[in-house]
Length: 206
Image 1 (cartoon, rainbow, N blue to C red):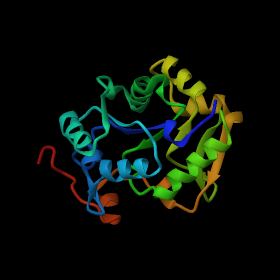
Image 2: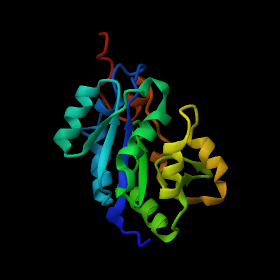
Image 3: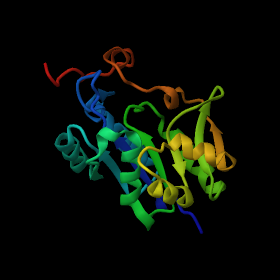
């Protein structure tokens, strides 16, 4: 298969409740943008298409943001079952229109645009491989997944995880070393949000 940059889809997993920050993390802000917007811009800069977000909690607000940004929205009705259910929903929606999928987590908004491009270059250079960024010997996010693994994810039971599948196919993993600490920076609490200069937490239940 002749992979072209535009054939790799970008999927943002953003279905979680964000209980420790009070709202879906897609709606938090950093650098003057909501997390979802910052990530969508990076995916667009890397020429991923289509780009879509998988939502669950605060679905209507996330759907509205997706519409404003001109990206797709996929509702995961089973979002309470965990992240793997959202991954399956996103990949199922992409289907056969993509020659690969770049999956990113909405609580990792600090991943640099250049990192997305480096991961895709590694993916184009290694057909059929799973590409994962690493920094200082530690693996992070996002991850680029080839069609064979996409199909396996969709077929897998709901209690599986991406980690289990990647362990099974460890021979297919290519690590792309990056200088970007953003691949390891997940924002889960108000304290972490403040530490990186973000805002917008604690509205649910206030």
